[in-house]
Image (cartoon, rainbow, N blue to C red; front, side, top):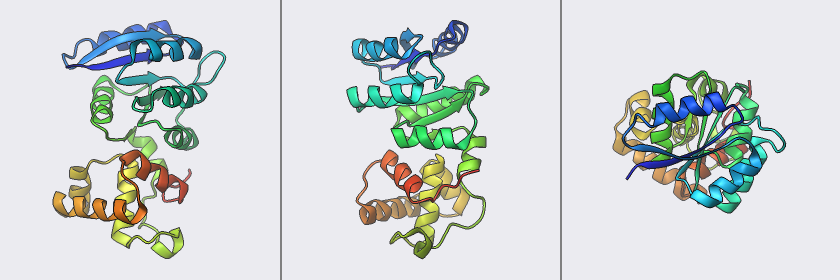
Amino acid sequence: MPIRIALVDDHSVLRQGLRLLLETQPDLAVVGEAEDAEEGLALVRQVQPDLLLLDLSLPGMSGLELLKLVLAQAPALKVIVLTMHDDAEFVRSALMAGAFGYMLKRAVGNELLEAIRKVAAGETYVYPSLAAKLIGTGPPPAPEQTGTRLSARETEVLQLIAQGYTQGEIAERLCVSVKTVETHRARIAEKLGLRTRVQLVRYALEKNLVQKD
């Protein structure tokens, strides 16, 4: 069954381009479009999509405000912010509000398709250049500095989860097995009392494990 996608953006040409791109994929289907927040809220209620592509700059209510409203209305909805705003604070705000993904409009088609499929599968996805801004390139902070009960390696794994890496990608980056990453993630979840990837991302943001520009 295809992933059912709704589009909320005030630029009709962009929406048309997105529809053309998405409908070339047999596993994706566009089920509705809206050009402002009010229409977007009604659209989500009416068509109940699996995933929402949402611009932040909308007439009237902002996309961030709409994000909070649609998730209050449909908590299981996966939302990818698709915007021109490339500031890390926008990314931080969107993820804290419940977005699963953050993409820039300059992204090429394949990158957007990858983001949609990862988010639909329950992963987070942040446009790579923005992820680099959020996550420091140096060693992870020690547990004493972050106020967590995590080990240094668990903290590093949590940072990479927040950056949007899959378990396989984390394993490759840290030169360990996927099973080891799964064990670290399970221990992190147990220690923090968090179940989902989004909860882990929010925790990392709240504890300053992701850094500002």
